[in-house]
Amino acid sequence: MRHFISILLLSILLANFGGSYVYFAFRALQIKQHMRALLATLPEEELELIVLTPEEFKRSHVEEHEIKVNGNMFDIARIIEKDSKLFVYGVYDDDEDNLLSFLNAVVNNLDNDTNPVPPGVVLFCVWHALHPQFHFVADQPAVQLKYFTAYHAVAYLFNLPIESPPPKGYPLLPV
Image (cartoon, rainbow, N blue to C red; front, side):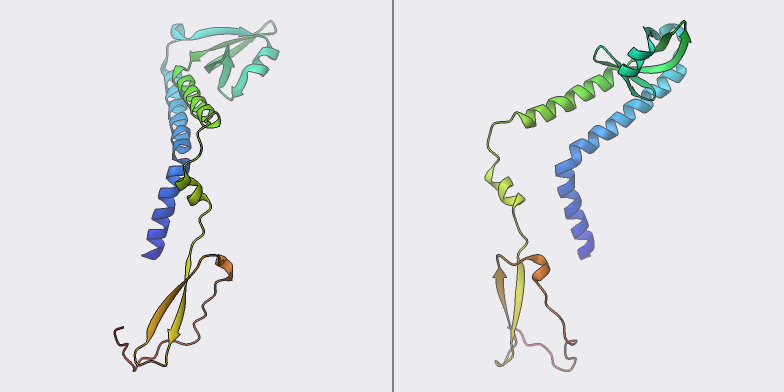
């Protein structure tokens, strides 16, 4: 149960920090799959033609089926080579352009932000887990459990060995 709660809390924290980037990656994958399906079913007369030299094609090549022409993404249906020119048939991908421009705007806004970081965020970033130290006092009639908080204890230095299992014949008295 503890592992499940730990994994859940860690997942929530990671979703807050990197969730938007995961969304962008997932959305970009969806757009690419949609465009591949669209290019497979689109009639030839609806495809746009771009004529490039091999050097221009190498400079504008982004991925296997994509080039960037005049700052816009262009999904390639097919390429025909004639007379040292490349005839590239495809469709401009406005959805991917919008997604990339939105991601660029988000990143630029974060970089250009001049407001100070809220103190709560700074405190969370430098926060160290506080480990309770256990101290059992056995000279009194009831076993007492005292908690001491170690503010500057490093996690790997904290060690509480269990030397033997608890006794089975003595019931614990309430504190």
